[in-house]
Image 1 (cartoon, rainbow, N blue to C red):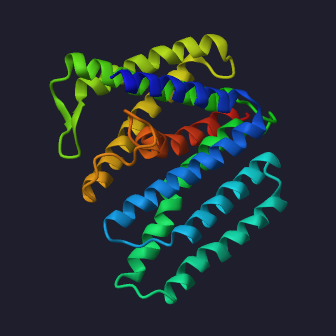
Image 2 (cartoon, rainbow, N blue to C red):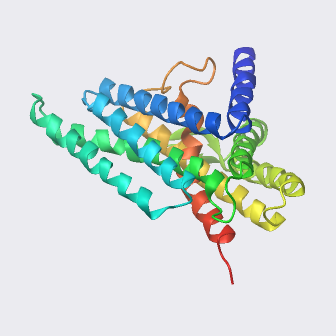
Image 3 (cartoon, rainbow, N blue to C red):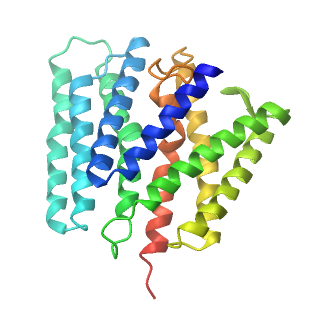
Length: 275
């Protein structure tokens, strides 16, 4: 428990610093983090006997992140959308590379290589884009920072309430420790943090911050369950050991994978809508 607490403290400090130290640190940090998560994903897949094209897949992930980031920086300049054509060649390389490998399941290898970018890198692209979601503002770091705070509030609330009051299993087949009581506790605590955020970040109404909290709680928990389902399918308890007491990076960011695209979509609709 002590190791978990110490790791969690330094983890939060690093994550907050990545958002608060300027947009260059923000941009580069989450690129590096996305690639480490992708590498961890491919390493887990390899344990199950599948051989994803790790190098080409990581290169594809880097190009995907940098391309979408460039579009965000350029205020959605149509000219930058042509850079997406680079991805055509990087994705094609995944298919071509498999022709030169002696593999019993080449299509499976290709599928998992591409799925890694979709499941891991795309959510980080959406998270990064939150800072640039409002086309009337150059950059607003409040949105990704609030997202992290609400995600942590949900995880912490679900854990504490679940340990104390948890009785009814939420999805025992995939995550035996999760309970409905913990889930509801996570939603309520995240909503409470959203009300506090609303006092400091006036970009949105309090009700909109609460909606974001609920979205993060629901889709963050769903992402957690999906990651648990994935680990069980390949008989792995933790995605890695890079974070003592917490497991791997995928274990820490599973809530982001589904929540980030959904929250970005909601933010885009409410911040760019003009009557």
